[in-house]
Image (tube, rainbow, N blue to C red; front, side, top):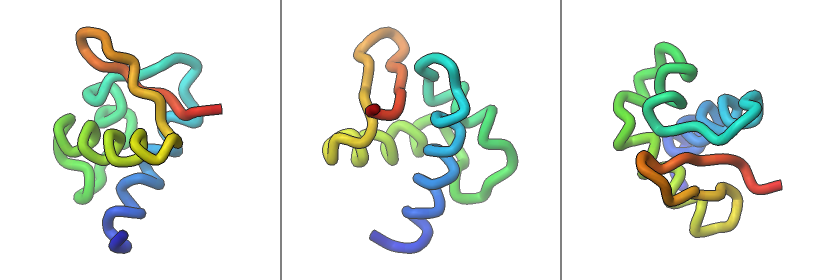
Length: 71
């Protein structure tokens, strides 16, 4: 994993860690603030999908999808 990928995940992970409930990719993007590495809800969903495969993020298949950290 490249440093940029880790930075994206770290920022997204911090947003999810502070959330009281599962968030959509769009909500995560809005809460992440200005970050060049996170520029679209699609990028957020892609990063989280990769980490979900490793068991660190839960994907809630709803419309829209929601994400939360595995505890």
